[in-house]
Image (cartoon, rainbow, N blue to C red; front, top):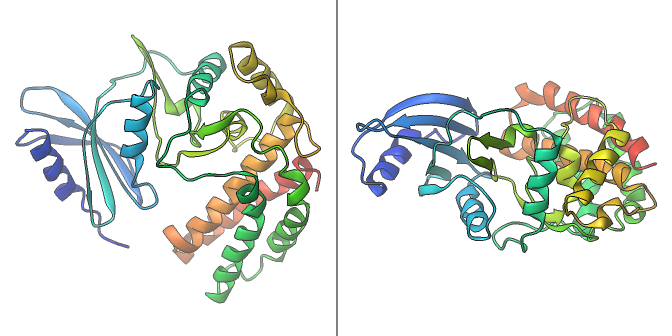
Length: 303
């Protein structure tokens, strides 16, 4: 893993922002990214965020979002060094309160109402249908590296989903189809004294907006289709596309959304395990998350 060049990145950003020095304070740091608050000599502050591939184009997504009128933190400066992105961003300060479901649907309507953002990947029906097959390819690579040896149950579940994927992926491009935030949780919505800002665009893509709505309540608890149905109805009521409620792939919209969101998460966890993290010590945690999500996917997608 490439060493974390955050100190050099920050120096580059300070130069770009006409600042000579800044005090650093960690807010949240993990192996692939970090968020810090920096304080300049005059007492003003900014957020310093850094991240490695595949999270290294968030500055582009934030700038496009800002141009399209989506409320996001302003990017003061950004730089790339040795495969790491660094950004100096507006410090929004403490939030006034936690975001609730009505905040979530309001933000989703604004985001999904923008035109498709150019610098992000596309997840259309063909790519959605391929997710279980891609996950099987990740599994094969893990096994060739002598990892995930006792994961026959994972292979069986992915095989079943792959066989059903052509039928179940129908409706992927029904509205809302466009910008998907993909980290759409209450913690990604900052409610301040003067309105809201949407954070964390590192994994934004163009695809079915229902995946955002399915992610709002998180994946730690078991999926709750009735709760998501209410959320979808709230979304339509405040201006979201009525097609958000339309059946797709032979399933109710809420089951389709929850099932494919979890399948999308499974493929991402497995790609992380084999490619981005690639550390056998993390295998038990990743395998546990994959098994839990697959247990949800099978009934949701009626496989």
